[in-house]
Length: 312
Image (cartoon, rainbow, N blue to C red; front, side, top):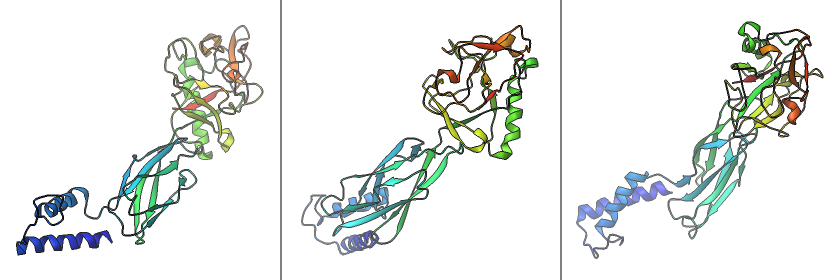
């Protein structure tokens, strides 16, 4: 409909210029003037002669957030017109509303389309989404957005590690090796490091050293392929307690070396000792509270527990 109007506009413009029609006004806003058609042609080239919609709001959809697009028409329709909206993935990017109606009186007043970034806890990749807009003339206008993933993954190892798991500087090697064995079972790929602190190897508080958590992320427990949210992190890259289900391990818990205030506590001599003469702090199984980083009391280093491995 609008393409035909533009074609007609060009035809009229050319006729006006070729025939040297009389100009009844010098007002460039008057359709009877040469200036009016010159401005129309210039605007057409600048904005796109076939442009039908004005869409603002961006293209980035955060997981767990929303993207609001403002939509209006470029041209005034003769009668009421309805546009239909659909999404290429309604599971992770549902939209509302599904239709918008514009009239000759409100065509240039923006209406809102809300796209919700639903949680997608089975991967840690961004997802391309296409919003399809069906026009009154049955043409489809695609609008591409990117759902920005906000997930990181972690898992608890089997109960195989005494307090000397980092002897020889192999603290993170242990977790990467465990992760490599799980990639074939659906664990998202990447580098995995050990959720434990000790001396100058790794520290959470008061100042961070080689800290492994990121701020404002959702940490998903692989949990044998069930993908359960364990914790979310705050702006300080620390677990916000009671934001998930905790980390699934066993009743033995997992070594952390943390005190309940995130400071470093007992660490089995920097995770190099399996002696019953030393102790290390540990966390509890499936505890979404502060117990998910420390039970508050240590255990002897000759006891075997799990480690928690975190995707970087």
